[in-house]
Length: 441
Image 1 (cartoon, rainbow, N blue to C red):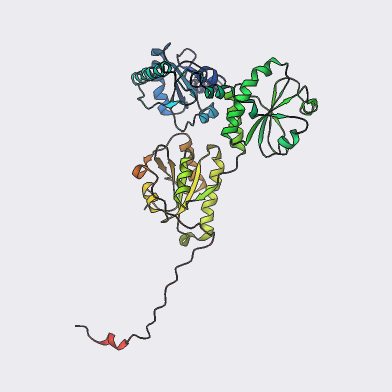
Image 2: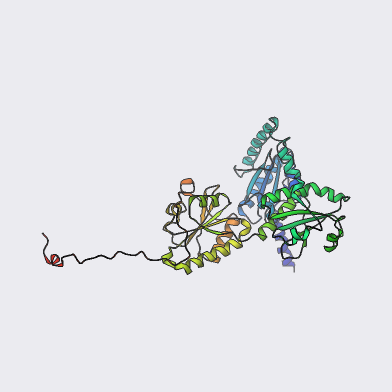
C-alpha cells in the first residue's frame, strides 16, 4: 500500500510540470478565451506534453523567462495531453510548440527562436515592440481582433443567424431526422445564465458552422414557448444543453460555457462522426497538390506494380490504409497512393526510389518536410508510424527540391489484374536460313 502511494505521488508530481507558485499561467479550455484571446496583453504560450523530453528540458527555461517577463509579457502553458481539443484548435502537431498571441489574437504566430530563457526573453521583447507599433498604427488592440474592426467584434460575438431556432414544428425534421450533429440549448428568456450564455453561443455557432462546413449545428429552443419539447427531454433548469447525434439517444453537454469550450466540444463531435477519409489515387498534379496543401499532413503510399501483386494484393494494401485512415480520422489528414514507377519524381523527392515497395511517407506541405515509414506496411507497422507522428516524434527530412515535384497525369486503376504487354509475332518466312551456315568475313 505504501509503495503504491509513493508511486502514485511520484506520477502525479511528474505530471505537474507547472505549479501555482510559478509565474507560468496554466491555461485550459475553461480560461483560455478569457485569459489569452480577450486579453490586451502580449502572450507567449507553450503547448506541451508532460512525457515529452524536449518539453521537460524547456520547463526550467520557460519558468525563468516567465519570471523575468512578469508584468511585461504574459507567459502561459497548455498541457495538450489533458486538453487535446485546445491543442487541435491551434493545429499543434509537435511538442513543445510555442505560439505568440500578439495584436491579432485570432492569428497567433509560431515562435521560431531558441529554447533558452535568454532567447525567449529577447524574442518576447522583440515581439512586444512590434505589438506596441501595431497599437500606435491602429492595427491592433487585443481582445482577439484588430482594434475597432467590425470583423474582430464579429469574431467575439458571433451572429445570431448561425444559431438555428428550433420549435415544436421543425425539431424532429431538422434534429432527429437529419444527418448532422446538433448541440441544442434549451433556454428561458428571463434566465440570467441564459443571457450570459447567449453571446458565447452565438460566437461558437459562427465558428463551428465555418470549421465543420455545417456538419455540426448549434440550435436553441425557447422552453417557455415550446414546453412539449422541454418536457420530452426532461428539462428542469436553464440553460440546459443536449447533444443529438443521428440514431443515438441525446446526451447532456457537461463542458464549459465559453465560446472556446463549446467550439472544442463541437470539433470533437465532428471528428468522431466524420466518415473515414477517402484513399485517393494520384492521377494528376492538381489532385496531389490540393490534397497535400489542404491538410496538415498527407499520407502517401507507393504500392507495388499491379503485375507484382494482382488486384487482390493491391486491394489488401488499400484495405490496410483504409483502416488506418479511419483510426486516425480525427487528425483530418489527406491520404494518397500511386503505383510504383508511375510518379518517379515524387518517389525521388520522398526518398522512396530503391527503398522497396510498398512504401509510405507522411508529407507536411507547409514545412516541405516528410517522414518515412521504416517498419512493415501492416496495420501494426503503420499504426506505430502514425502514432509517433501524432505525438510529434520521429525524424523528418526536407522534401527533395523544396516543393511537391512534377506529377504525371495517369489513368485511374480499373480495379482489375494487370496484363502483360502483347509481343508482336515475328515472321521469319522470308529469311534464307542457308545464310547462317556461311562464314562471315
